[in-house]
Image (cartoon, rainbow, N blue to C red; front, side, top):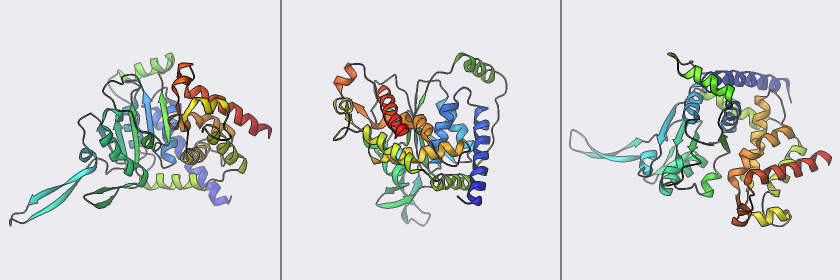
Length: 332
């Protein structure tokens, strides 16, 4: 690695620390959630925020949009939301001279950071409208390709408790999210700080640390970061061990209905580098894999009925696989 690369990494890491501190002014007691959300964006990907109501998921997305200097928009997903409400549509207009022509009106998806609030409330038809945009960063409307702004990220929220009237996300769409970010309740001290900070007259102010160009440069730096062969092998061992089939353990073969595909290995490879960069390091290590295995893998796996009936969860299974594979990697 050249001195220029090291200097560039150090500058980006410093700005990321500033961004974390800025976000913590408004988002209290959720440091891990903030870090994982930033990691998803640093990798150029999308994040699925899963948590009970009132845990600042919406507030987090709004604050991140400001701090990263992104043009952000919000869509509240409801059962009657249509694809055109997200993508936009062509309307027929009549000019003063009587001529008629179609004019395209952009939907809210034409932004740099889209918040899809309660994404599982919308119908599968509307959810699928995001698929092409999330993967290819463009949409096709009336047979014409329309590119989305760069960078483009989706941060979707989902409540895990009230499932009546919801439409579970299909596997193909879940796989488009780089990370599933679980938002838990804060501890007592953090909740006390939240209480004091949010019930006064004034709210803490935040300002931009990045702009779109700076964020793209940081995303490029993540991909340029070297990754050791041993880390690549650990990532492959872990992802492939979570997939039923030849070579998988008996536990996985009898418990897992479907496992993570190659996109999971790609996501974990990028995520560990982004975490290392945020930590001021110039290469990822095994600790990064341990920290990010759950958010990368858990939404890319499903257990069979028998395994769920016996009390096995995806989290427990991933923990077992991490202990096995990283233990093997450490002694290899």
